[in-house]
Image (cartoon, rainbow, N blue to C red; front, side):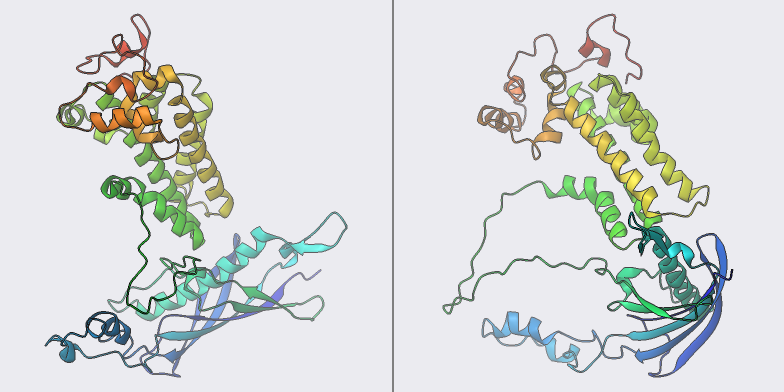
Length: 415
């Protein structure tokens, strides 16, 4: 039985394949459907070169500043000019064709015996098409200094379309090549406020927070979310592992502060170079409880990262979901441990930095934190968590973290 199928696909991408509109570029490339090698013919036709697009000031930017305040136009504005309203962003129409070795896996039978879409197989089909386009672009720029790609669903201008013609029936059918929100795109979903004829603006109030630590801590996490949105699974898995490692390092810094270590002592001891396993060992030592399941979850995140980076395994949505779910489990485990009064009392700073957003503090604790943040004032440290005395846990200059567990208790990975 011949299960092959001819595949034709067409989409548009925000990039100019040639410097002249309506000129084309054709190339044959090697791609893959799952683990099966596939040869594809790709033709790229330039719909718009992008000349003049993004050159000069945006007229609305002028309206929203100088014109709004009825000021004189700055001297340099006419020199840079304004955008041409008719200038189009770069755009290329891409058409390709190839022979799919076996199309039968695209659909599976449901409980009623009716064919339904098989998402993993369709993801392989999308990967096959997008990889073909990437290979075609690389062949265009291989002798130039231009760098483009890799393209993904987020780079498509609207959905593309795929024509599949099975050899066994010679009856073609059509499916979509789905586009997703471009990387960095934003849409609030809020209706906003009607303009005030007197020129006033409604200013919603938002509580201030420390932006720098948040930016540093969650930069990898945000990258992972954006990469996953673009269905770039390999990059999303790597970013997910990096974000978990950064998050655990953040907790380890809090534990060091709880034990009175200075930043210079922290650096001199080499904790900035600790790998994920060593960092988790330190957390497990101090947070206590049964950390076996959390340890396996942390190793799963690292294993999936190594699978796509070092072993060359094909990154899939399943591998990413495993990494994401495991990372969330490790974080939940740490948060739950730091909600236990005895653990939180031994590590008040660590407990506060991890829960001040997710679990709002009581008014008494908030007052204690406010006083704690005053330079040189540690009087309110006992009030940060459950309010019990810290006399059995000195707030500063502990030489051995095992002291927080009492004498004679073995700590697996002490500082």
